[in-house]
Image (cartoon, rainbow, N blue to C red; front, side, top):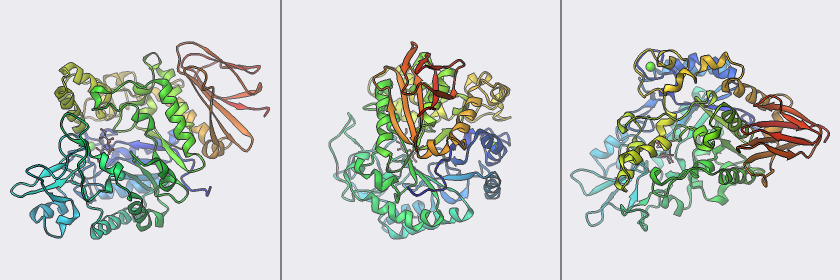
Length: 558
Ligand code: TEU
Ligand code: CA
């Protein structure tokens, strides 16, 4: 495998609106990111992905871009952004921006021109189609509910939007539109970005016949992704994109890909793949309900272990996946993947360890490193997220009571991860001096950066030790390039694996169960590299793991 500069790096996702506010308007900003660079450096972060900060009407929190060349004034100015790039570079850190190119905002100049003249040049930047017998052109349901086709007033035409109606899909069959996107991407790369996180990219390939499919819900519609699953040829578009942009800059790219055809893994993230890496969403997919959040099921340990191990095995020898336990679209990982009895700081450290030492590129989502948790909102009005409102409505329509619908939001809302970062136990969690744009989790008095920095046993200081171990001289090659092999899969509630390279082997073992568990070790001489509890016993070839205990052991005599 050819070594690349980003192998072995540790990444961090910033959700800028909720990271750190420096001017008291209740919204995080670029200056806020700058002020916290040393904090991130100290944590061991190399790559920072910032969710969208482009000009946007914020219908979907910046994932609806109205000008790709502008920074939204909420976040600051382009000068400040350039300063951020410079400051990051000084610290040997790279900035990765979000690239949202499946769709733009309906306020984008292109779409405004298209609306004014759907038959004209800009009309073809989007998908305008005539309806059929008074109905939309096909029966697709958008990701945020309702038809994926929106009627253009006063015409027979509809335009396609896989997400909100304010997010029209861009027509990737139009060479001119593509060139405009490529130019824009290169313009940002020229500034010195390390790369991009690429949003919803699998959706760019459309079947231009827009066939209807059998409905998958009581609304008579079918998930729009059904068409994406049926159509071939996204690879050609992705290669074109890569060759025209990223490749020339050795940019790091991490793609958000759901519903990839399994046999395409190598084409996506292999040595010459479309992307450097892509997120492993296999665990997240266990949380999907058949019709929405209201019929989703809790994650079971066995299924979770199996699916994450499968991803690991499939990818080795091919490339790297990006490993996460949460992001801005998912609830907090500690609430999703830990059983309730393990939702404590020992459990948080345990989950972190097994995730971050996997083979791949670890991504930490802001607040994860201090153990931030889901935030209970008292009513639907307290939520901001467009998808939460849609899911609430869907739940009610399918017969749930208000309480049940709210409970589903409490478990799965995207706002769970979007509440402001908890910097201190002081007013507004030290996030802002003003009124925060979204509720702050009341647990900030216990869970916050300031207090955790001062406490050696905190989740935060544990994350630092964990990342330092992954990047240490002795272990970085092993944790980057070493193979992955499941261990003790016959043991209940044990999540364990080996990482090995050139005769060196390390065991990562965690006990997600309620009872202590004894394991026979393959080597009776083991060195403890890390554990979340004192007095880890690994003598004479046996290891006793207490509930919520994780241990990282190097086999010494082998
Ligand atoms: O998400 C794309 C995506 O595929 C969705 O399934 C998303 O996970 C789902 O809506 C969660 O409820 C990306 C962004 O990460 C998301 O924040 C945006 O809303 C979306 O694209 C549209 O740009
Ligand atoms: Ca601000």
